[in-house]
Amino acid sequence: MIKVAVPNKGVLSEPAIDLLKTCGYRASKSVKSLNSADCANGIEFYFLRPSDIPMYVGNGIIDAGITGVDFCAEALSPAIKILDLPFGASKHCAAVPEQSKYQKLEELKGLRIATSFPGIVRSYFSNPGMNLISLEGAVEISVGLGVADAVVDVVDTGTTLKQAGLRILGEPLFFSNAALFAHPNRQNSPEVCNLVRRIEGKLLAMSYKMVEYDVPANLLEKACAITPGLESPTVAPLHNKNWYSVKAMVKSEEANSIMDKLQDSGCKGILLSNIENARI
Figure 1 (cartoon, helix red, strand yellow):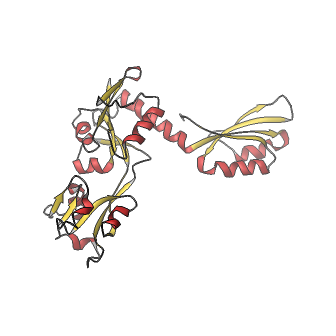
Figure 2 (cartoon, rainbow, N blue to C red; figure 1 turned 120 degrees about the horizontal axis):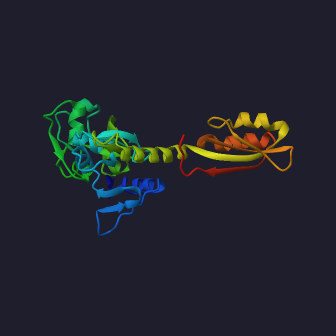
Figure 3 (cartoon, rainbow, N blue to C red; figure 1 turned 180 degrees about the horizontal axis):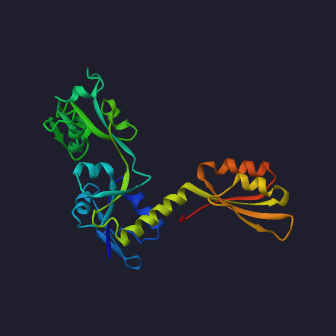
């Protein structure tokens, strides 16, 4: 049975669990347990701290896991990133007091910098001897308390830093997102490959929608040109010999525009539906 780690809390937890559920896995987290087995799919889920997952996967204790790219980079984990996921996007930014004289990132090298990701900060500045203050959280308050001169923190909107009297300095030091990682010796195993296929199928399904419509015979070629599908649209004759039913996958972002074009072309009964999962 394959072992897969899932974030037990934070912004990555709920999206990761939801993704696995939509892929057909029973990934429910129990209040009293840190793991759950899905025997039907031959997989056991372990709900762990996102920052600990790179260690478990990198050492082969867990076969694969979902966590942030920044957590894996910080841990210098040998775990292999095998699939980026469409959630958990964030950036690591430096910030200084609003009235600070500093205007460039390079000026921070000699200052006291508070961060939860000292490894990423050292790597960015290529300076292992930097004066870094490692904190588990609430990094933004450290400047106000006199502990640090600047911070490097995970930023979404920047509101938290602004409320603490800080301004972002320069470009982000690091960009992150959620990803599926695997131990190097397990990334090509049948179990991990099956997990990847399921997730890829769901991500593909999120990128497409299914459009169905009825079209008169004299407009069939024109309509099929609007909805060519992946290989070719599915076309079936209706009881009325002068009409056809057409079904095709279309890009999600183009779906409503395509519906407009079909209606303008004379098509009827135009329906748009989500795709639960897909294999192409």
